[in-house]
Image (cartoon, rainbow, N blue to C red; front, side, top):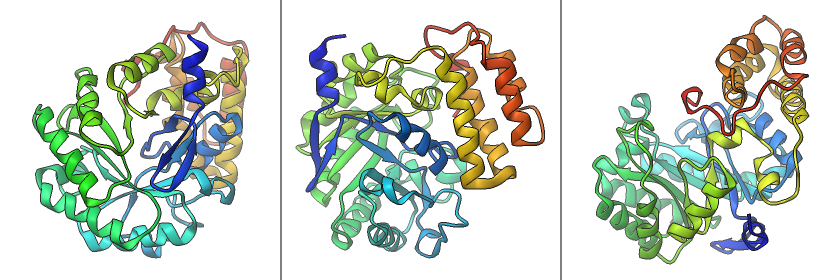
Length: 341
């Protein structure tokens, strides 16, 4: 990989009136991008921004960070932490954004991309793309209510129509959005088909605000191709970042990992899960994470159930020592069959 591209990944850019130090960001991932995982990523560095997992806009104004599993953070990460919210009511989104600003987050991100039925049936997430006027009004109202950067994550729409995605990008920008994260798949497509990166290029050409590309970036070469083909301002990494939390540091030339890193990262995350969430919730979160960890290995489908087996975090630690201390055979890229989220 060229030194010039790696240097570009480390370069500064702006969202609204704020500077971001790096072109790679951690995409929002439900039940994966929690405070413990973000602390693990932060220990390696190399990222420009971290996005929280999505939080309910209705619940957020009165949420207690000591209780809420998603609306929880470390003070040191706030300068580069964006809180993602979902909702169907503009006023809920406004009140949530105001709370986010009050707590000192870098910015707020409005989820218009989640296509899970439990979210869409309540008029949230990607369902907002069925109601473009409501979606645009939400952005406008939130922008009027806060001074921090306002971001929007969205998909192509419910039909494979790039013109719709381009039109929405323009309307979001006109409503005051400071940055877009665009995932070029239709909402009904749960990754059964490859994302159409060329749509990212069309969105980028249509607006003057920054656009982050998202979708099927698994290698540094994938990253370079996305940027080269689309002109996007940065890349949001989701599943690959969960599988390899050091990916930001590795791709920006800050770290050359050895095979031992899988073992050490897993043990470190268990400690962080215990610190932030305790035994029971820590176990549940580790089980979800361990599927992505196991996807790195040739026989990951057999390793995965062995990693989370047990009724305590100490049992999990012992599993990690037994199965990862001598690093199993690695795949050239993680198994997509094990990337289910």
